[in-house]
Image (cartoon, rainbow, N blue to C red):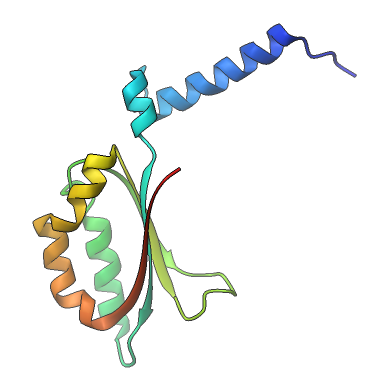
Length: 133
């Protein structure tokens, strides 16, 4: 059995924190503010209304993914079919990671998001969560 000293433990923890900070900054050393602000998420799930076609579902997926690069501060976008057996009718969902709270707060009003909602909102019953994790 290997003995773990306090020094080894602190070095390991320090390396893990450094890796997280580097990851949050896109490979460069992040400032403390960047590291603290890099974990704001918007999660959503859809129940499709009856008779929504597969083509419209595919369009929704493509357009949500297409917000990446249009929305300032949107760092990651992941969408797809809900594969959980506990989905309660929510068959599609996604999660987006934002640079900071200001970016997350600006997202709903962005023109690209508003354009998506014009045609998508009548096709879904949705649940949304915004969180810092």
